Image 1 (cartoon, rainbow, N blue to C red):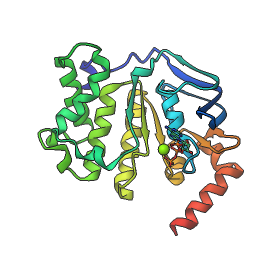
Image 2 (tube, rainbow, N blue to C red):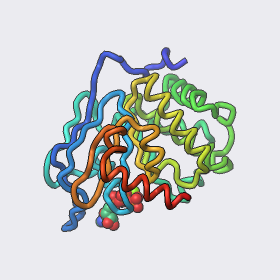
Image 3 (cartoon, rainbow, N blue to C red):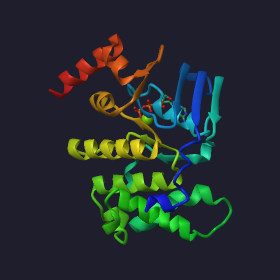
Image 4 (cartoon, helix red, strand yellow):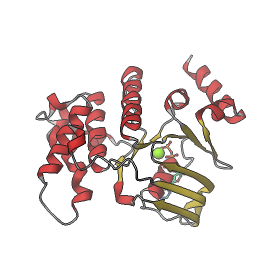
Length: 250
Ligand SMILES: Nc1ncnc2c1ncn2[C@@H]1O[C@H](COP(=O)(O)OP(=O)(O)OP(=O)(O)O)[C@@H](O)[C@H]1O
Ligand SMILES: [Mg+2]
């Protein structure tokens, strides 16, 4: 089904977002500094780091909502509005009085510009992405009546409707049980491999990061670390965080 929709991408076209020496700040407070990394077509990037290390702030920068105060962000072959986004959840956002289909379809809003009507292609994209995530049977259900795991799949479908190039998920696993979480990361990995779609996941779950990611960006208040999952596992920072999470979980 997805091959016939216009959100499938031309696999010959490359795209990337690169941060070079970027810093972000709110008024006088610098939150992230001296950050250099890139994400490109086919990457599956996990962004990890402690509470307040600036993960959501960096996401705002990638989405073009916050300008770096130092350094540059370069987007090649991808515009800021071509990034699908699943924001860090607030409880109220789970209470949409809309159907599952309407929630998925609303992912097309950014691509429609000033046209107030959804097209047939928009509706096909919503149906195809709900099917891809195994929740097509819930299309006419009220979103707020779903379980947390079902809601997350619908919100992932919504983000996929917004972009076939890159999706960014800010802590998509919060409130989900470990099996549902692993299932969501597995689905993302499948989409990443099959569509060559770049996926960026913000997470506190370092075990999942090394299991699923191709690359890891670890934000700290000092020097951030960007590496492949294998390099991260072997690094002093990665080994330290992996072992501290193991002992917290056990
Ligand atoms: N709109 C804002 N105005 C001022 N300061 C902010 C704003 N948003 C975030 N901050 C501050 O910036 C710092 C980084 O916040 P951010 O939300 O990016 O962290 P995070 O890594 O996403 O944390 P968490 O893991 O808790 O989600 C924090 O000290 C926070 O208080
Ligand atoms: Mg955050």
